Length: 123
Image (cartoon, rainbow, N blue to C red; front, side, top):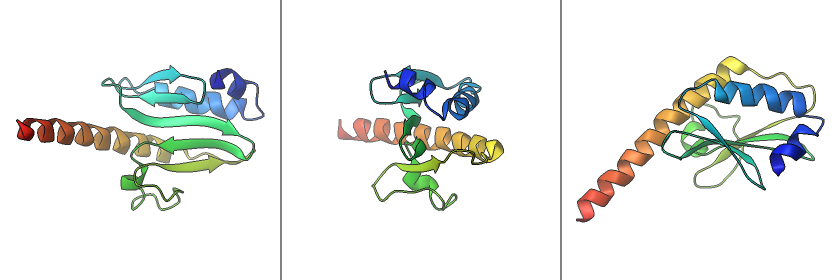
């Protein structure tokens, strides 16, 4: 499991701190798999994914492309996701991350509602 690997990494303390931050939201639950640890909303939609790599701890925001105008430091060129890479010893602005998570929860709910509406319009 990637979770176990992350706990054995040099980023374990940061990983656990961020994990606690994500799980402090009642709407978010943790899902572990072989590739990453995901934090999903109550409907099963991904909010953020976390994984340690050789170059640092990577947070991937599932609705990151929509967040990028508000948080221009997000990296990535994909159509949907964006990420933040934390390096060893780097400070983490937990207040800002909480705001990003809150915004991600809203964007994910909007995405779910739009999918539901489109499905209803097809019938």
